[in-house]
Length: 322
Image (cartoon, rainbow, N blue to C red; front, side):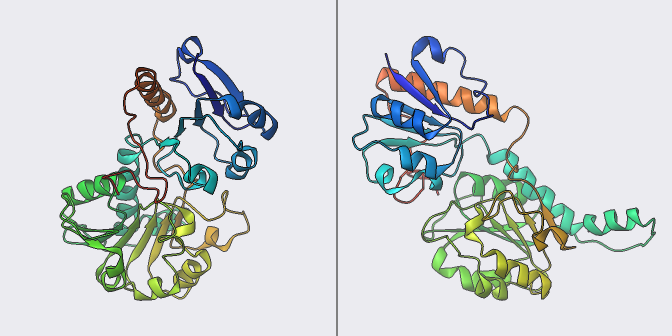
């Protein structure tokens, strides 16, 4: 019988949607290093719902018999440590579950900035009536760093609002619904043209620290920055400086290099910043959909069929995707 190890947090319940798995496979629930070290050497499949990378890496067996690792997230950077990355083990992710929710989050953030909602809320608290003009979205230029499935859904939704969306990927290509997709090497020349810069890219060696002081200085002073990708793509101190120095006009941030964001961090009190708790794509029912998605791939695994959502472990990209 196929042996499935489920790595989950100590207080984390088993994913809904895994109905019937225990009748089809031997299931081991692992929440600590000792259980992992005991169970992984004989496991066929690892299902990861807790991304404490150091725990998994420390418990990784010298000669795993694992054939498949599935991540219940879009990003897989926290799983691509050398022993797994350099193995023949298939790695899949949760592509297809988060695109729409994240695109809606991005649209909501852009509308919040365009309609000056943060100021409205502050004025409401002080019971201050101040008439102001706000911005239209039509014709605004959006630069999306990351032209994969999430970035494409963002482009589709923003394009429907009359915005012009340019994607940035490893190489230039024609890819609707983007107006165009440019190479990452062209990013410095593209940044000054954007009214909104949106990060949807995975964390890779090429994207880590990509948005630093130089990048923020290249942006237009009226531009807003939205990060729904990975926190370490941004140098947080440089972002804070850009906001405080009014080098950019605002930021909506769902991910951070340190999570949870410490309560004393000055980003919390910036008047032109919206912060959320790494939840942009987590719409009602998302956990059940993650479990059901795994079960579809588990059935394919048992039949010897090719798995869906296979990821290139050396780059963090889905072949043919980002």
